[in-house]
Image 1 (tube, rainbow, N blue to C red):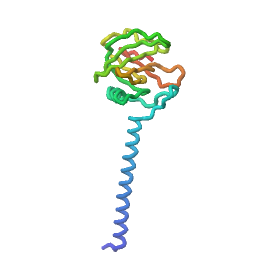
Image 2 (image 1 turned 90 degrees about the vertical axis):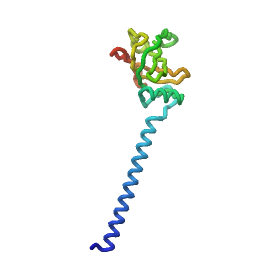
Image 3 (image 1 turned 120 degrees about the vertical axis):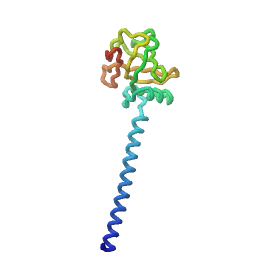
Image 4 (image 1 turned 180 degrees about the vertical axis):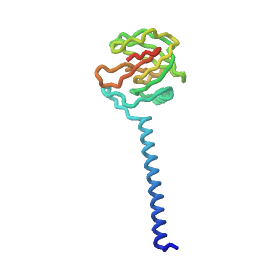
Length: 167
């Protein structure tokens, strides 16, 4: 038979251990929540000289960026070329084409051909993968910075077409 003092200590110790376990569980939950919230909604500086830091992927990320009217988001995805546009020769030259995502959202891809090679043989109906910076507009958005940064101050982007990576 145990003494009343020993059994009281055991209950207090067990109670303390349960309370501490609950405290740890809450701390872990809060840390996980903050981590996930930081990835999804990470603050992006408004300066052009600072590159985007978080990279998000896929149609859902594009839909969220569009709905929230977000810009300066490093993003990657894949789609089908639905229209080849004329190059933009005003300032830095850009190869331009419109991509439809599986979700139906369309994006203008503006690929700087003064910095990176032109995506060769690109045609309507071709599948492409890409990584660059998303900028919101009412038509679905623009993806640019789909190339390496010669100054090393911006996260590199790329376009993949028929197994060839253009960066």
